Length: 227
Image (cartoon, rainbow, N blue to C red; front, side, top):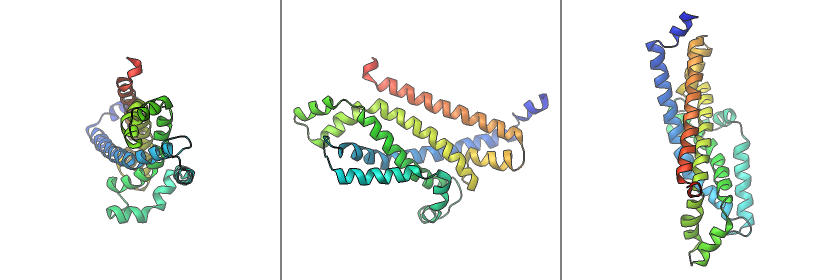
């Protein structure tokens, strides 16, 4: 037992974990930013095109909603393999941490869109009515009333998205995506190194908990109702 515990803290394993952690943070960070670049506007459009909202449009709303539902219905491992040609066209390869960012982003965009939609729908419609009554345009209402009011919920959604991306990045290791998932598969599973598997799982748990706690802390700081 003592020998196994000592094997958990070897310099080589520490170096492998640090490299895997940095690769995972790189994949999750970049894909999270890109997912919100595309998913945030999509979520806003899904809300404002609903009936009795700023820009009601049943056709656009239903089409975008269907596209988002299709994107969310695909298991990540299948999506990752299915868009390999697209990944190669974007980054020139389908293997490695940079290549994994493409399917991670594609998988996260519809998820982000739904998270944003849910956050914006929590905003009291009276806030929108008040902004419009003060002479604000629809665009100003979105930027200065709707989004700021939903900011705490949006940050909580970002934390949930980041946690999901950590799970997706671990699956990306199955096809050479790098990161902690790749470390667990290549060393922990294929080489039967239990110490690597145990430490990888422990690091993933700590990472997920840290992301969730940071998201909740930021949300509390931004929520004026809790002050």
